[in-house]
Length: 304
Image 1: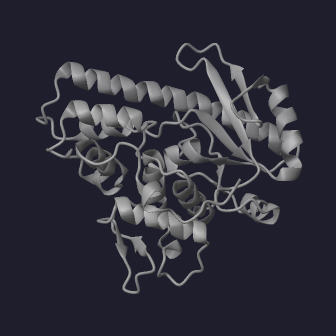
Image 2: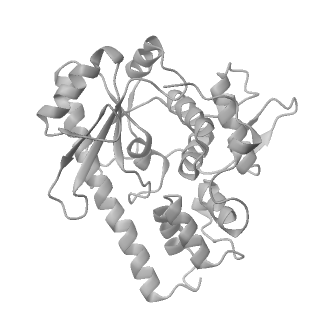
């Protein structure tokens, strides 16, 4: 996995450009409105929905609109549709969580350390309950020396169809809502492909927070420690700025203030680049330090 370069003004621009749509997406990426669900009054609902669908943030939008003031102007049919969107994604995420748990158990049984990355890893840790984080694949991290064993294990579990990437495997589920599950095996992180760093990250994994083993969350999955998760998310954001990545990195950054520029901790260049994207699009959340080297998290939604 190649390390991203410092973002330029061109790469700082996220899809959707400026205007009302971008204002709505920044509102969704900002963790703080999860406690204040009033949508931007200047953004038409149609434009907000279209932008959120394209940015894969429509479930978060639905949650905020439904949690807002009952007199916010949503019709009963609209409320019904928004509720259906969230429930469908919750079922999608539950199915993927069960598959991920099955794969991790099989890998662990073979002595292969693994960690769940990206969307599935963030769903219960960073977002309110209900399956609000949208994703398409299960992303798993293993050491480079364990890659072949991981792929063999996937094949034994029925993941035999090739996917978009060289290390992506899919299987059919027979489920009407989620007919296919795809698993992408990675041997590097956004901020490092060094095998020693990857092994250290795998050794430091934690059981994800916010999972109710007796409810629909299933068993807790192994995820990166918060510092590693933030470094990974910041580097991915710098390499490919996306609204969903901005939302993830913002929530992780608020939960790990010791990794902000100006905190005194040494930061890889890729992390500084990710902070630049955060500050460019959420300046009211991430403020500049007095020496101009970066910005730390403001006050907002804390880790659950």
